[in-house]
Length: 343
Image (cartoon, rainbow, N blue to C red; front, top):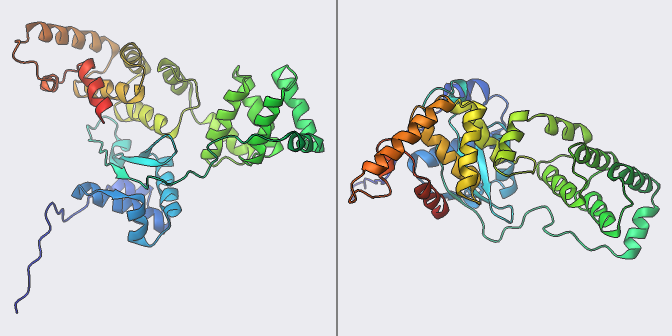
C-alpha cells in the first residue's frame, strides 16, 4: 500500500516574528510565556480558533499558567485582553511589536477571538459578604484595625457607618489588603476628591485584580499613567482607574497612530455625542479611520468632515450600501455603531 499524502486546508507554513521581539522581549520571558506567545502568533497566521483550555492542553499547562502568561504579555503591551462581566477572558488583541519602535508605520492590528470556558469562575469574590455584628465587633477590637478605622474617619471627615466598616472589612478580609495598603488606598482616593466608600471599594478590587499587595506597588501603579490618560478617560465619561485594556487603546492612539491629545479628545467628544456604550471601541473606530485618512492635526478633521458631508450629499440614492464609507477612507457614525454593537 502506498503512502498517503495528507493536506491541511488554510495551512500557513511560516510564522513571522519581529526582530524587536527577539532583541527586547525574548530574554526576559520564561518558557511558558514564550511558548504561549509564539502559539498565539501561529494561530493568527493560520486563522485558527483556540481557547484557554486548548492552549493549556497543548503545552500541558494549567489554565492559570496560561492566564498568567497572557497577563505578562499584556503588561509588556504586546497584547490586551477582553473580559466579560464575570472576569472571564473573551478575546485577545495581538499588537504588532514592530510598530512600537516606529509609530508612524501603518501596521495592521489583529483581533483573534479566543473562546473561554463558559462557567469558569474568577478568583476574586463576585459579591461582598454581609458580616455579622459579632464579626464586625471582633474586627474593631483588634488594635491595628481600630487605629486604621480612626485614621479612615479623619481622611473621610465623618464617623464610619456600619456599611462603611463592612466595606473596609471586605477589603482587608477578602481582598487581602494589609493595614498599610488599606490606609494608602483611602488616602489615595481622598487625594483625588473621592470619599465615597463604594468608589474606594472599586479601586481596591481593581488593585487586587492587578496583583497589588503592597503600598509600594500601589504607588507605582498610581504614578505610571500621565495626565493625558486621565483626560481621555474623563472625556469618554470614565471616572474609574484605567484598566489594562483601556490603556492599551490609549497607547495605540498616542504611540502607534501618533495622534496628539487634541485629536483624541475630539474623537472622544464625537463618541460621547453618538453613543452611551462601547465608547472605547467607538472612539477607536473613529481614530482608526482618521489614521487611514491621513489626519495629523485637529485642523485636518474639519476638512475631512466637510468632504464627508459633501460626498453624502452628492451620493446617488442607489449607493447607500453601509460599506461605501470605506472606499474613500470616510466614516459613518451610524454604521460604526452598528458594526461595534454587532461584534
